[in-house]
Amino acid sequence: MRRLFLPGRSVRWILSALALLMIGVAVDSAWAEVAVPADSARAIALNHQLDFYWIVEKLLALLIPALFLCTGMGARLRRFAGRVMHEKHYPTLGLFGCIYVLLATLVSLPFNYQRHYRLPMSLGWLGDETPGKWLLEQLAPLGIGMVGAILFLWVPYALIRCSPKRWWLWSTAVLSLGAWFVLVVQPVWIKPLTTAYAPLADQALRA
Image (cartoon, rainbow, N blue to C red; front, side, top):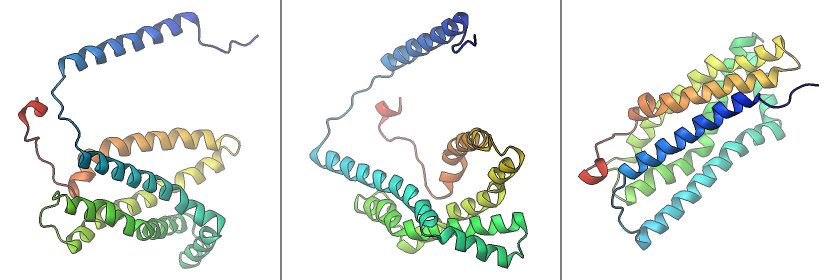
């Protein structure tokens, strides 16, 4: 009969590692405690507004591809890219990805303007930055998205060709690694292209 669970020794090792990790986090948290100011009514209202923006952003991330899929826009865009690239496989995928990234950016641009420019500007977070300068700064993530589409959009299609029955599993593994890479690289190399960071002014919080 097949074993459906990990051997007992492996389970004990995993549980021990998790227990050590939790102890380490608890000890680190105990040493890192700092005095936190009480929330004001304005801060709570701002947090609710940011939560609303976060929810809308996630819904847009789902609705935009659903719109392309369910309305046939994706198929028409693919046919257009194929005609322009003379049905060459990889150039067609690259052009399709670039146009999709551009259209998705334009659809979400009004919302991003409200969230990332109007709201921070009303709070004095952006100094004297102008709308034109903010729009120019959006070209960097747009260009990075297009380059990413050109470099990686072919991967799921290659996996479908190589493994018709398990392509979804391999695609999940590859895209998970890609997502991890983006989460690690974006704050360090991409965000500083459009965002200025400075040390915390509060010495206690910095410590």
